Amino acid sequence: MKSVTVSIDVPQTPEQVYDFLDVMAHHERFTDHYLTDWRYGGPGRGIGSRATVTATLGGMKTDVTIEVVEAEAPRRIVERNISAAGRRLAHGTYTIETLSAGGSRVSFTYAWTRAPVADRLLAPAVRATMRRANGRAVQRLAAELARQVPAADS
Image (cartoon, rainbow, N blue to C red; front, side, top):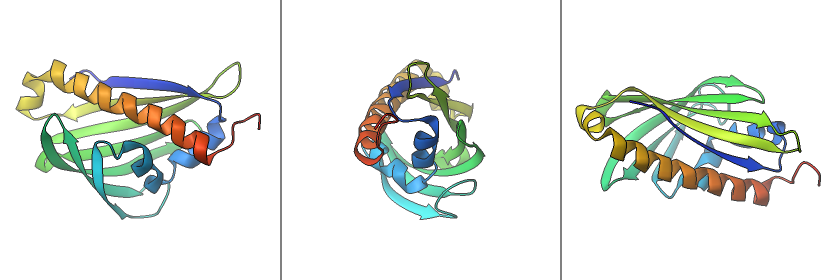
């Protein structure tokens, strides 16, 4: 399946954005519109931090295990997502770029490595649903950053 990428520009520096995203518990604040019942494990931040959540999308509920598997401060965080009893394997990648006018562009790419047959058969609808959910998540991330992290020029 083709990956889905959403992006948003924020006034915070890449370092500020990375420091916020590096804490797994912070993700609950901007994804709880479709990821609920967060249970944490491993370290609170960095490689090995993880959470098990309940994802509710398209009228379906499934548990998802999210674990940070790569991190390159302050530019990139890669999470491995396992769900559907192991039939769905994906990676969520946050990429943080410096904007020439200041601030950062935060992009999130969800890429399937393995997907159940139903996901593949309904790929356009599945991708559209993920694009909407993750688009809303990055908008909520920007709002959360505005509340929690001063802008780069503040």
